[in-house]
Image (cartoon, one colour):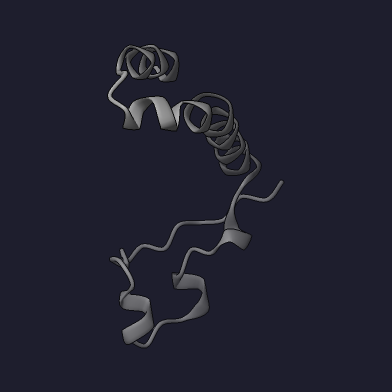
Length: 74
């Protein structure tokens, strides 16, 4: 897979919406590498399997399951 170079000038926040920018200065989802996509997939799987099923318990202040989940995240 081809590697995309990161622009030399750092664009902060949504400034690309307000300032004149060249297309190659803005990092877009099309620029994601396979590694980026795998990290996103891992984060999504963790959220679906470990966070979403426990949201109700955490909102009722049963924090032991939160501590267990945080240990799994590390």
